[in-house]
Length: 270
Image 1 (cartoon, helix red, strand yellow):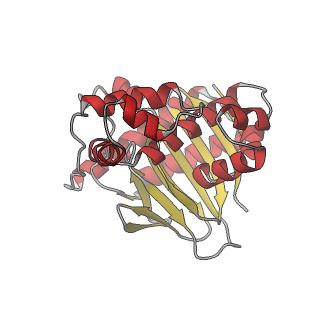
Image 2 (tube, rainbow, N blue to C red):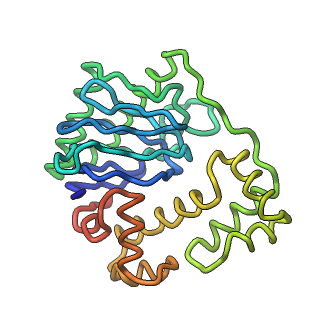
């Protein structure tokens, strides 16, 4: 059973401590994503069809909107994970790096002594619900160390070019109607594209399918509502277009890794 031990939201994004042993479907985030194993079994993070092992020696870096999935061999032995979702705007405002978005140069993060110390420091703050003023400093140091290491490796991940205006239009529509019953066929039509051309052009421009992108938006809204409102889980699910709480809970668990009610119980907002 996957469960959240702690979750903290702030200007940097989100820092979460999870126990996981059940696989997760292919999904994406608009934030930069760092995953570290603290204990338990080794997970496999699939990126672009390639399995990246997550262990005490290797962390995994995932770029914004890079599709990935998580799998485990043993459904009984949980892995204890520290997972960061890094707000690209926050990262570059502090680091003063002139980039358009947060992109790691390599998916592999070696757990050096410095990285290990920072991972443990962040995890301990989460467990103790410690001084939130320390989070920004530790999280920036950890994110910057991983960013620098990934580019020092001399590997350059493929960049997605400037978006076609019709794709930009479709993204705007999905952002506006993420919780409404707006079919992707209608998004394509209102963007001036046929369904096949829309799917092809969207994937070429964004790097993921329209379905995965829409799920990303719904996931973000669900997380924000769970953290910042007292609305019932059922109400949040219905507002996001799910027919019942069970279908919303299944979606949330498949894309976030843990049940929505569990996430709400542990989340802290700065």
